[in-house]
Length: 134
Image 1 (cartoon, rainbow, N blue to C red):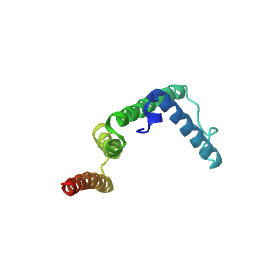
Image 2 (image 1 turned 120 degrees about the vertical axis):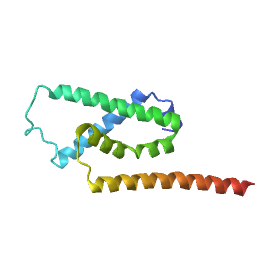
Image 3 (image 1 turned 45 degrees about the horizontal axis):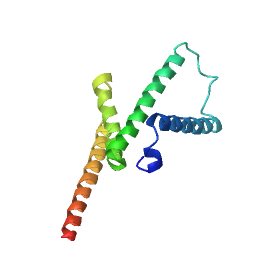
Image 4 (image 1 turned 180 degrees about the vertical axis):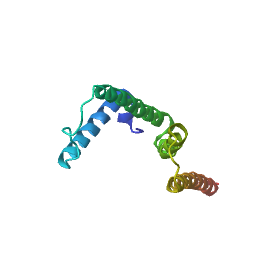
């Protein structure tokens, strides 16, 4: 996203290209691994509505990520993306009354420790570089 040819591209157009590539790739993988089965699916009249709703939310997520990358930069956006599993676990526990298992807590702690390690190692490197230039 920080490269010039992607920076000038409209996020909706880039989202469309990304979605097409992902759909084709997953379709090919699903076809050859025989995990993409339509025969066993009981057709429900709500399936097209679900497809539209999920597509809409996916598009919003991809466009938001691209806009965030444009304003924050790729490194900071990637750092914030690490919080996605933690927010999904917290949302599941709070909104859906899911059980919070010990391994989920350990996983969240590992993610937070990794984030803090990245943040503090960057600040230490900046301090070292500023001392070396003086």
